Length: 153
Image (cartoon, rainbow, N blue to C red; front, top):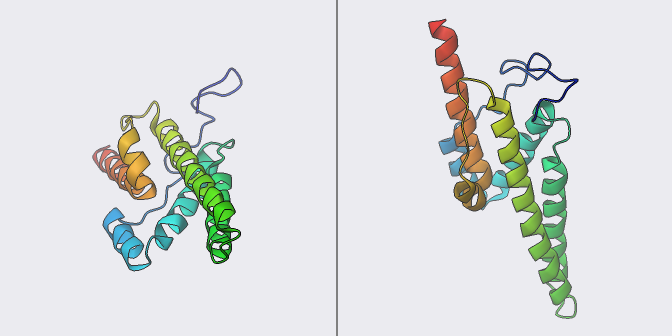
C-alpha cells in the first residue's frame, strides 16, 4: 500500500493491529492434501479477509469468491455434454481469478511489511504455483521475525 499525501506511516495498520492468520503452513499443507485442495481455497479466503484490513482496496476476497463460484459451476455444467464446453471456460476463468487473488494477496503482504525491518519481496513463481500455502509460510516468517524483535526490544 503506497503512502499518499493524506496517509502517513502512522495511519497504516500496525503489525499488531492487523495480525495475519496464524496457522502453521505445514498444518495448512496437510489439511489441503486431506481435503483435496478445499482447505487451500478456504485459507486463501481467510487470508484475503486479513488483506482487506491491511489494504482497504484489496480485491482478493472478490477474486477468490469468483473463482469458487466458477469452479462450482464447472462441476455442475460438466455433467451434461451439451454444457461441458461452457463449464470448461468457467473453470479456466476460475483459475485466472484464483491467480489474480493470489497476486493480490502477495501485494498486500508486501505492503504489510513495507517500511518495517521485516521488509521482503515474495516470489512470483511460488505465488503462482502454491499461492495461499506460500503466502502463509511468508506470513509465519514475518510474525516470527516481529515477535523476535519485540522480545529483544
